[in-house]
Length: 130
Image (tube, rainbow, N blue to C red; front, side):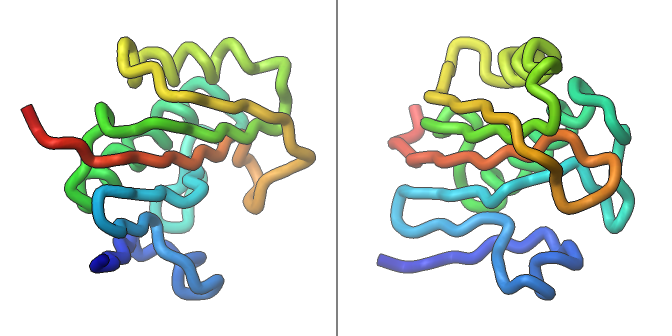
């Protein structure tokens, strides 16, 4: 099967040797995505807005790979304070609605950048378009 690497040109991709997303056949894996634009952390320490921003970035990566949010089958959510699970979950629910992918949310000690409080990965399987 053909492999396509999708890049968002963040500094970490080239420095750490990874892609924003990878598509092989109908499968798309979106790497851990944080609320960063360029080198700036967006909405520092704001769980709801970071989650919304991240899901927009994931939506773009999926689009670049030929997929849609409706193709997402799993998300993995990392938060620095599980006490904010409701804020993160609310934003996640607003994006996914009735799609309802399998999802896991776990608390981690910290993320790579100051002010980052949420990171999300997504897995998708591209189905025949309606």
